[in-house]
Amino acid sequence: MSDLARLRRVRDRIDREYAQPLDVEALARDAHMSAGHLSRQFRLAYGESPYGYLMTRRIERAMALLRRGDLTVTEVCFAVGCSSLGTFSTRFTELVGMPPSAYRTQAALATAGMPSCVAKQVTRPIRNREAPSSGRT
Image (cartoon, helix red, strand yellow):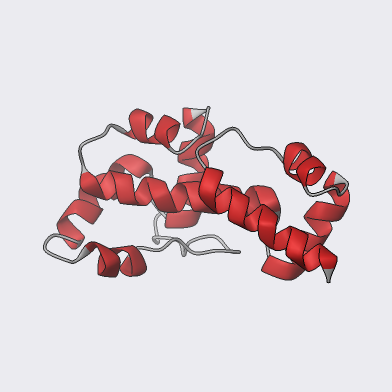
């Protein structure tokens, strides 16, 4: 039971501090667990690794910022805590099914006039699996 409470605190910390430099070692140390134990238990409890959860959280926030349209893809990348534009773009494409620049263009059109709370649900990234292919090869 104490592991579950610690895992909840780790998840809550990721949700709060997603834009900060976080790594599994530091999260595990703060939860008084080894990194391996944290990763295994987190995956059992939430269906993905702490790093995967962190990146999904960052991509969710990036999607919201890109829908706003007032920041460049590079500015969004750094605003959500990613330090590599290449890694950000790759992970974004895996989760969303299109590169951030294409998403920015399409999402602005698709969610125009939609309340932000509805747009967030409609455009939520797919967790634990890659986005469906767009049919292009």
